[in-house]
Length: 187
Image 1: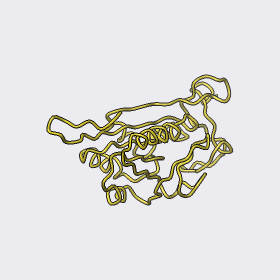
Image 2: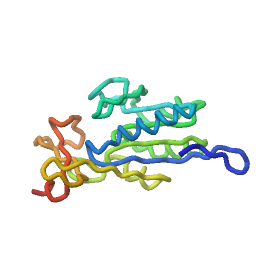
Image 3: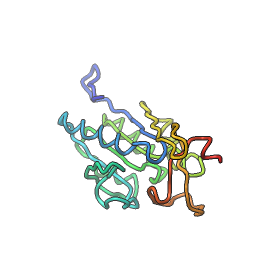
């Protein structure tokens, strides 16, 4: 996808959402799209929530260890302050952002910016996570990715938490979460 001028010559922006369970490749897909935008000589800014320090404090890093430099931020309004003179905005781990994120994405798209957002659509208890449902409702394009169930090898939609912690936000990797299909999640 690229930013196409409309009949009057203005750029038109849009919102793309990449969602799915943990280990489904969301961050990998976000990085792929952002690197392609850079190859096309588009001006790109990338943001992630400051609380996500699992792999790196500054970079967005996929489970496959692909990485791209980002700006860690505390709230989504900061994106509006830092998104000057850009063509594409990337946002990782959108489920951790505040309730203003969908409106921020909408404002950016109205300015002619392509906004690519990646995040978990459901938490460990299979409930909609953070602002992801609102982002999905506003999105022009949606990509739902799937992992592979570690129990049976089928398509996995769910992030199963292996610990007893019932807090909605628990940062972790394979030590805390594993992808499971509907049947294995419920067993």
